[in-house]
Length: 256
Image (tube, rainbow, N blue to C red; front, top):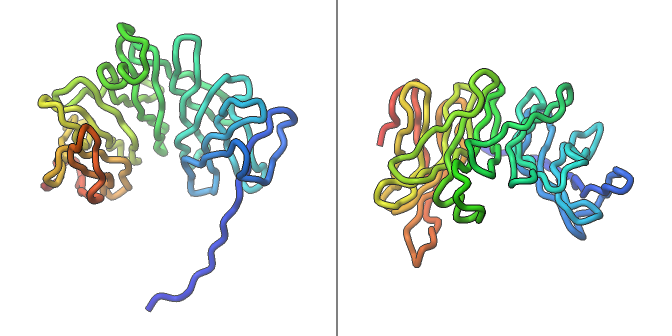
């Protein structure tokens, strides 16, 4: 029998770049929390009083901190239990994925050869996943993501690694667990978009669509369970139908 539990909602506020003070309000330009670790450290994006959005780190002791106060635009998407945060920051040519911690500060992870990249998640070993463009032939952001983007895995030994696709042009990675399994989505040879699971031994594995045309995988836990969405083509739009869950096992392909 379930018992009643008490919960509290904490307003993380927005960032005032003028005096670096915490504002206890969700009004105005706003802020967005994107990731949290097991020590209640939160990362996300906040508008500043001058307009641009900046990546932030929040914790109960220090409250809201601007991770990249000198950046024009930046956002943070994930943080591990060591306090390493990842995200994207604007550059002169586009945007670069970054890794940040309170000892080494900012590390620009670069791109796979194109003008843009973004880091989405980081595991306990410091492995980072995200998406990067690979080609400078187009500077349009949407076109470059659709045609020239690749899921990547980064570590401090090998740097950025292109994880490839499921036969199409583009892919993106959204999450990684502590065993190094990566999930995301990829174009297929026939133009559909399918959720994938990647491992260093097996490469990309198509998780299917549960009967739809489109699917994406957004999270994976330590047991290898994957969550995401599947949909159908409807005038070019993916319609959310049902969460899907797959089990990665221990190096074997998930059961369909």
